[in-house]
Length: 83
Image (cartoon, rainbow, N blue to C red):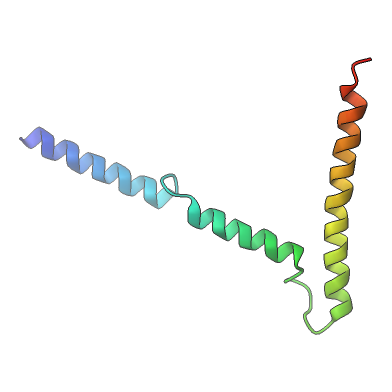
């Protein structure tokens, strides 16, 4: 019976360790990262009293995403032809 209690305690310690390290449920970390990315693309770090800076930052960041996707597609087509 003592072995079963020891095994149960060890399992509980392992589960607590996983939860503290974030290996069991990463939903809070994922939610935090999602908010961080959303804040980046909505220019939450720009000066809110300057609408030109806010919109310029938003446009610049979204334009960088579009250019990155276009470049990735071009590179895929360029190297993926196999001719």
